[in-house]
Amino acid sequence: MTDTAPTFHPESEAVLAYAAGGLDEAHAVLVATHLALCPRCRAEVARLEAVGGALTASIEPAPMSAGALAATLARLDEPGAEPEPSAAVAYDDETLHAIPAPLRDYLGGNLSGLPWKWRGPTIRELPLSIGSGTARATLIRVRPGAAIPAHTHAGTEATLVLRGAYQDATGRFGRGDVETASSDLDHRPVATADSECICFSVIDGPLSLTGPIGRLLNPFLKI
Ligand SMILES: [Zn+2]
Image (cartoon, rainbow, N blue to C red; front, top):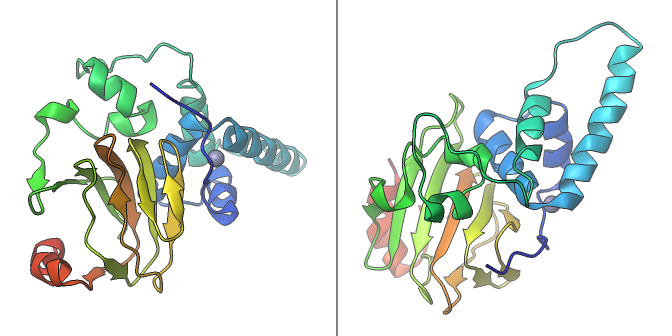
């Protein structure tokens, strides 16, 4: 494994909202999963929570925020710590190494045994049920060197790389990196040739595919 600290982080507004417990569950899981791989953002969330704790302590006792709990759980999964298998699922090494704890228990099984849906010959997707909000959470597997169809989206798409890497017009995104694409970015990510790429994507609004392959796939992705 060639784990290095991530280069691309969630937007600072998202990290702040996470620390304040103000993110919907799907986005909170994405940030918590990034935190498990990113010492810099863990330190930032701890700093924000310390500030928030000092403020609330001076007002009145308050219950711990959802973000604080998730962050605490994420810290338990810091690199170097031995992954704790869930009581319900006996995770295999591939799943333990690829999927940090904050996301793992939403899978319900090992990567090799999940009900992936093919979206063409090179892409598989797994919609994940996370929380009751409108955000769409999906795990995506792309074969080495394959392109993800060009697409835009009505809302913002946050993509966290869990294995391998992909490249688009804005840069190269490897394990732990988060790309936040607004609705006006028509991007065409391509997995690097050396490895399969697994990403966790959370999209605010409906997806609209723009390329010729995208138009073909669009009916499937409207679900
Ligand atoms: Zn970070």
